[in-house]
Length: 163
Image 1 (cartoon, rainbow, N blue to C red):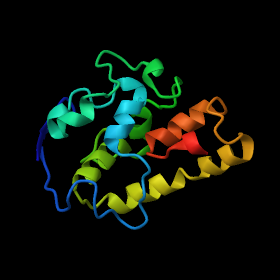
Image 2 (cartoon, rainbow, N blue to C red):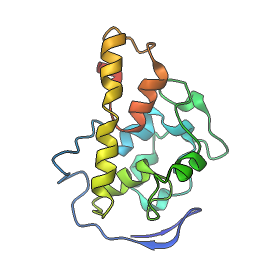
Image 3 (cartoon, one colour):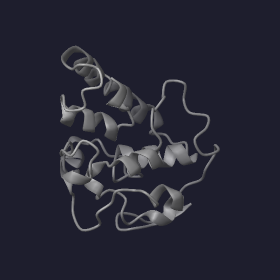
Image 4 (cartoon, rainbow, N blue to C red):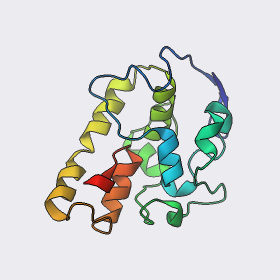
């Protein structure tokens, strides 16, 4: 795959696994990138310029807004994102995935395996602390309880609708 979008020009990578298969045993996302995009993540602004890199069916029902971040497009209707500049300042971005974790996940899902996989999987696992907070503070299924936390979990492929 060769990527030419607004953030990367001429970046190439190869697939070594079939899409959606052979994940690290410590990495068990509850939702696929296609499901996340259709539910509404990142205010719809994420990935509006990289459709050529991923399957067309991922975008058929995706809630996207190429103009701006729109929290109403998020599943929980709230903003749970930090700006990309914040992520850069924290040093959380790998040069091969300049958009961050979700870009890494989309590529991992498609079959790319990369030197950054262990770090990204650790970061994904660290989001579980929010699951405990939901379970301790919300009635099961109350989607109005802690919507920012629920939206943040959704960004990381955790499905809090059933918690």
